[in-house]
Length: 171
Image 1 (tube, rainbow, N blue to C red):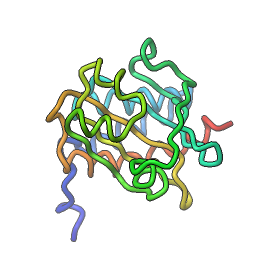
Image 2: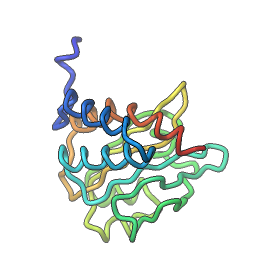
Image 3: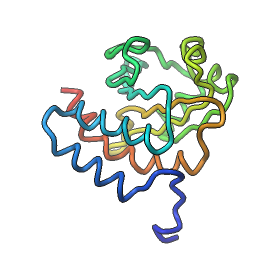
Image 4: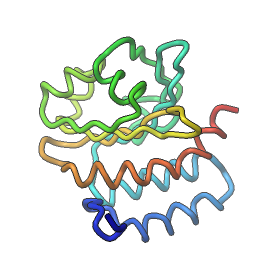
């Protein structure tokens, strides 16, 4: 398979890499890169909620390190992601996930009531992987039917660009 045959949905990978590369060079890291990634996702696939979650494997929790809606989802908010099927797939299994419908949101997230109250019934998640580990997760949520498998593939390719910012956020 050549690179030109990889489906990336509505993500324009060369343009995205240019945007993210420029953002990574700006002062104010890691928030500058996080905000650029948020804007890129908003422009490419749209969202009503965009969060970046850092994975604390020993504690079995994720911590919000970026939020497009800080009133509802403030920074540094933590939530348990104990032994769930979603956690086994995304956090421990290092895989992506797409949900489409309220039942999928309920299945995946303990805070599903708040997510659904925001009109979010679709979600794409891609892990941020580094050195064999999952540092965290990119979470893009919108109305039902917002995302397709190809969009998830594009998000997964781009999630790796966040690894340096995740490492900086740990400090």
